[in-house]
Length: 220
Length: 211
Image (cartoon, rainbow over all chains, first blue to last red; front, side, top):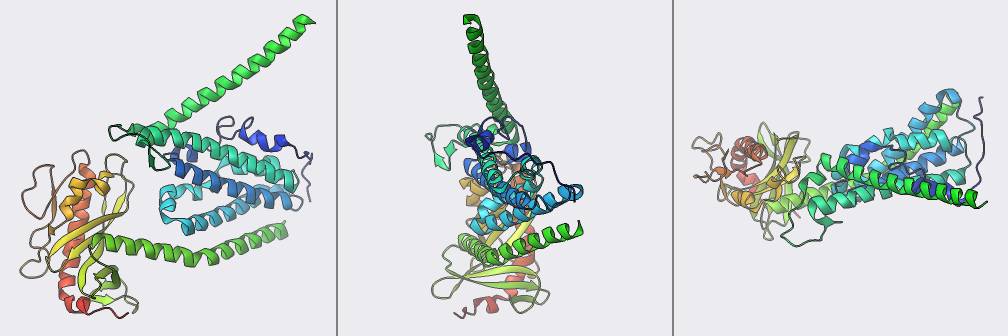
């Protein structure tokens, strides 16, 4: 049975934080754009979608990591898909049991978690090579990063497009909601805005590192 | 290889069945509560309901193996029939819109409306769910039975905003014409079918529910 090359990674804080910032699935890797644009028209939908995806990431990551020495390399993708689909089905039933209104709001996008690149990507690039604990911590970080990204889009879109946040009215009656923000074009506008901000912050911190290195070189 | 795939499939199957078994009663209860809430919203003053099924022979109590459209009879505290709630559907702007309508046989009029499922454009088409002026159309919309009892005396129709003249017309929302028209079409189709059946089976509907 073919063994995958395994380079075990030590469990550090970076295993968790990486998903939040350096490898944020939405703002840095630009993965899973379909749910990011589609279900972020309110903050509640965004959080629900983020948590559902986190659960699938954790569950499928755990199972893939536990079975990594038994899954033959030739059929690994098929195995990952079956495992991921199992957890997506569980989430699907779970959300129906929690709230039918939420289920109606998220619609087809719960089932579509199956084809979310973040989850398959994590299974292939991380869970299939690492032990259980680092996998779980990394999946949690990635899931939280995804949830935060969805929430930052969902909150902006709900405030601008509906004048509410988590369903609470923020402005007086005279506020004219910017309806385009909760329609599909608003998703692209807000995503573009956040990407601009993230890239600007990253470029600035890289420039600072370079400047500091330059100063040191001059001083020496 | 086969053993691994079989093992994974077995684990998956077990997990899915387990979750399905745990959540099934909760989901069924959620759906029951949602339907009940909708029925009590479209029939004012109702506190209890019974399910009927529309068959070729008229309305029959649900649960007897009869197949067909479900109709909900709603009763007040004293067991008096307050109205009948029936579903309707029509193609809207984005997708088929599903409604629940309330009908009062005493005044022969439509007394309530509720959108069960809709993907109409937020801010435009979804006004059919909450625009007060539009919903006022359905407080007592004329749905009289025709003389021969085969349909409505006057077909329910949606008219351009501000041109409503008769009590069986629906005043459309300006800017949401397609969704307003779909509402009228769904109501007319469902009422043409259901209202005659309701009046034929009025005795059965009026018999008080056994508690």
